[in-house]
Each structure stands twice: as C-alpha cells, then as structure tokens.
Length: 252
Image 1 (cartoon, rainbow, N blue to C red):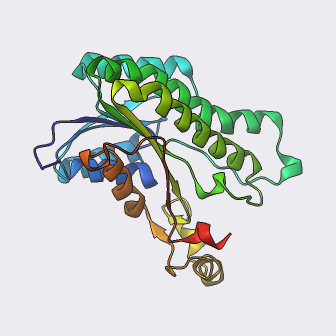
Image 2: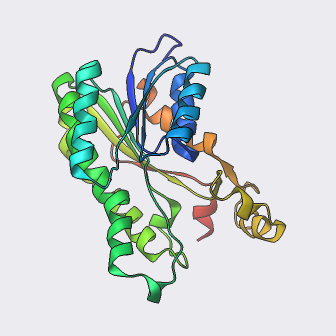
C-alpha cells in the first residue's frame, strides 16, 4: 500500500509494545488506526500521537477484550464511525509469570479470557463488516510459547497454542469471503514491559545464545511482518503461522 492508504485498521492492545509498533507501521502507510486499549489512557494518547506523527489518523477506543459486551460495543463504534474495517490485528494479551502449582482458577480464566476468548469474540464482532465487503485481513499475535514449553507460563503457553487453532479454523470459515486469517509467533521481543529485565547482561546473553541471529527482537520486527500479512503481497497466505524469532524455533 502507498502513503495514501485509506484502510481502517483495528489493533487490540495498541497502547504499548508490539501493538503500538503495529499502529505506527500502518500509520506510515497513511491508514486510519483504531487504538484499542484496556484503560491505559496516557499510553494510548502517546500511541495516538505517534500514529499522527507517522502519517496516520488515530482513534483511541477503550475496551477490555476479555469482556464480550465491551468487544461488541467496540465493533459497533467502528461501524458507526467508518462503516467498515479492513484489517484486525488481534494483539491484546497478558502473561503473568506464575509457577505451575501456584496458578489458580481465576488467573487461568483471566489469561484465557484475554488471550483466546478475547480474540474469538473480537473477530466474531468485526467479521460481519469484512464479510459484507468480501475482503479483509485478520492477523493474530500468538507466541513462540505456543509451540514450546516455558517455565512459569503454563497458562500462557496453552492460550497461545489455542490461538493457532483458532486462526486455522477462521481461515476456513472466513476464506470464502475473501478474508485471510494468519498468525505471527514472536520470540523474545524487547518492549517496555521486559526492557528492565533484559537489561541484566546474563539474562540477555541467555536469550541471545539461543537465537541464531544473535539478538533479541524489537517490536518493529513483528510489526513489519504483521503489515506484510495485511498487504496485497500476502493475498494468498491464509491459515499460516509465521515465526518472528530470529530462528529460535529451529533450535528446539
């Protein structure tokens, strides 16, 4: 797409990290970017400013993707504002680090509510706009943890593995309407959430030693792949899972 891109792009969890990087990536093409956030108003305003500075048109909308009611209200607002949605980036997610024996039912339910249930109902809510247009892109942010075990992330691993199954099913259901559905699997990506943790040399060195490219990824590395999957260049890619991990997956 050119700088005159007129698409409407929804990014859940867009106020920080990978979501914010995706917002900027689409803004660079001139898109209208709906910045969904769970209530982080200051961070969302910063993201909106960056979208504007990058050439896009931002709209911040608060909604907890773990709430079906709020997700449906989000989709309704998008329909009222624009009457269409061209790209949905399902990025919102949480990853509390809790040991296996200490994960209780409420934490398990919350992780799956945001990471998996939220993706399903958000797609269900916005899909009719794409189906009526017989075109659209759905890109889910899963994780390398979907295909490998991680200590203290059992619930997160399970939820992100579920995302891959969801995307494959959506690809079959929505493909006949001209809608492609794909997933990206980020490996270790440095964001504001883990930057302080990665600042410790031994921890960074541990990850870098397991990555063939020898570096921890940046949020924009993932955003560029998401943008590619949303482009016409990827119009025949459907139901795929793309690792963005510097080759870490092949070290399994």
